[in-house]
Amino acid sequence: MKNTERLQVTTPTDREIVMTRVFDAPRRLVFEAWTNPEHLPHWMLGPEGWTMPVCEIDLRPGGAWHFVWRRADGTEMAMSGVYKEVMPPERLVTTEAWGGNWAETINTLTLSEENGKTTITNTILYPSKEARDAAHKTGMMEGASQGFNRLDEYLRTMA
Amino acid sequence: MTELAEPFAMSQPAISKHLKVLERAGLISSGLDAQRRPRRLEAKPLAEATEWLEGYRRFWEGSFQRLDALLDQLKTKRKKRRRTKR
Image 1 (spheres, helix red, strand yellow):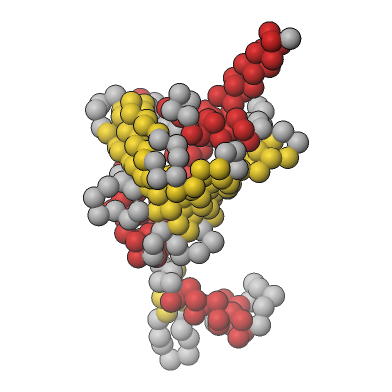
Image 2: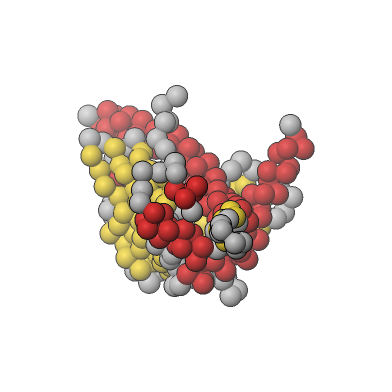
């Protein structure tokens, strides 16, 4: 298989999650796939079983974005934020929140290109360690991960 | 601590420092008896830490595999478009 590029996820500080990944495409295309509502719902779906029926993107500094994911049984997850920096094809900074009292993060995506390959680095910065921990206990765990955990269970029943 | 230090090429003070950090982070706890201070691994916070990171990783791992495929399609489309323009 060609896609042997590995996703690296690290936590360099108490407030950050950093992920890096290499793609076999120029960064212009990666940036487009990441920011164009025509493309995003086809890939930013996590594990199998989710669709993205809502993908609104106002790609300019101060512009808002809103994503909703849905599973066949009707379970939904929503996320939204505001673009802070939009510099195609090298940099995208946005805020991101699940809503409610969950912490808002600042996500910085950088894209660098070498020999037609693009390395992306996405840094998720929490306002504080406490906010990060809370998000992972209540937000991520009950939001995203819970959805995925349920999906895991579901997949197990199918096996 | 002597026992814990044994497998490592590290001085006792260095080991002691590492243990203190782990203890402060709640990842180990230490008991107390007359001669020894046995350390206990606190598995729960470690499991919690890897669990949320794992959920996170799974989301992006799955997404990025799809993105690989989409990027291949986009590259092919561009090439075709360039060819038809000529």
